[in-house]
Image (cartoon, rainbow, N blue to C red):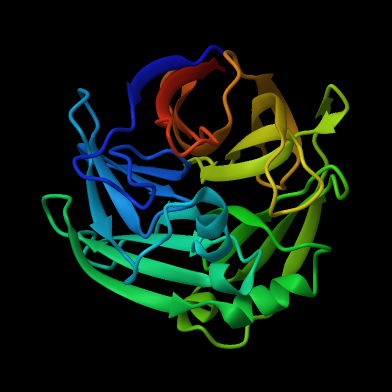
Length: 296
């Protein structure tokens, strides 16, 4: 699939890196006329207009500050890798986003429930301790690194990313309400998902988005790294489609090469439309928003 650059992720004030842009974009949700993006090395949520290239606004989710030095910041960042929209309340008017850390270190086991007001601005933010959720996940996978999630009925499906030493991704199902309550969580199912390799580097999941028909769109990158902490050479990226039973039914390579870490997807009459954000792996370089479509 050909990616078309839509904009760079510039923001109206310096973020944790000291730059006026979001570099490590890692989760994306579109609601109404706005795009919401989390970065894995930021303490906030960036809000962009869905049209045009005006700078986004960074809204704080977590207190404190992060070091500007990339290595020091990497050690203490919350590593928000997941952003999804929770189901609307009974009145159909409540919009709540959920940002979740990757869980790959103790500092990355937090989440934030983010209420949106009618104009799309951020209202109440509630922080969640997800230690017990990640404790359960750690008992089901070799190495914890959650990068995507979708809601399916009463369940939350979490996508744990593999790497070159552990190429299998894992889809874990838990009860959504129990996960949000922060209590003991049972893993209801754990499904292994092996994706093809590019230049002998396995494609591993970086985000997930559910479609109305029950299928799931995944982004995946072939990054030459053997663990959940270090970055590596990027060999390729792809979009994948799973059916309702989590079977891989289609995979499309992406061009140009970009480390896609967040996606928002929906079906139009003849295609699956996709918005995607990238991680530049360099705090001095802005991440990008791309658009594309898969013919169906």
